[in-house]
Amino acid sequence: MRPEDRDLSYIWDMLQAARDIVSFIEGKNFNKFEKDKLTRFAVERQLLVIGEAANHLSDGFQAAHAAIPWKRIIGLRNILAHDYGEILTERVWFTALHHIPELISQIEPLIPKKKA
Image (cartoon, rainbow, N blue to C red):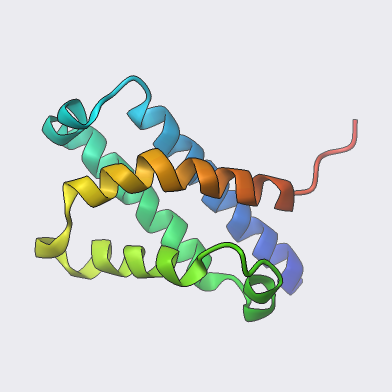
């Protein structure tokens, strides 16, 4: 697989995970999210997917799209994966509610549209 195809594959994975997060929290407020362990764990898992995919993107791709906070995305993945005691529900909620829709708007245009 060509490097540019690999990068697009990772971006597609990120987009799907981000869309899942949006659907998981739809209609919820923080109190419901905090009490709903299944939803919290599902959101955390998709954040891991996003961070892992971002970590595998080529340096050239990341540099070409420097407006996307790759290091922060990967950093959150590392916290979720390794610092179990440090996972703050408020941070996960804020990320899901505010940063994920922004990320979607940044990466959607990076995926070529299929020709009809």
